[in-house]
Image (cartoon, rainbow, N blue to C red; front, side):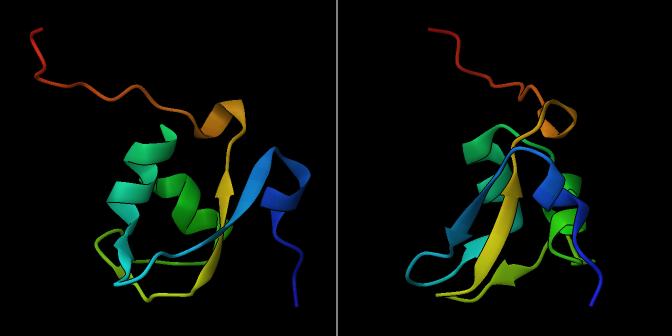
Length: 74
C-alpha cells in the first residue's frame, strides 16, 4: 500500500461524527480545500457524505489552507 503524502505534512486524524458528515463541511470547519481532503484520503467525490465513524486524514499544511468568503456583514 502506498504511503500517503499527507503523513509528511501537518495533519490530524479525524473520526466522522454521528450521522455522517460531508467533505465540504469538514473543509469549511478546518479552513482547508476540499481537494486536500480528497487527496489525503484517496477519495474522488467532493460531494460524498462520509459515514459515521469513518477515520480520515485532514491535512493542515499551508498548501491545504483556503480563505472562505462569507456573507456575514456584521
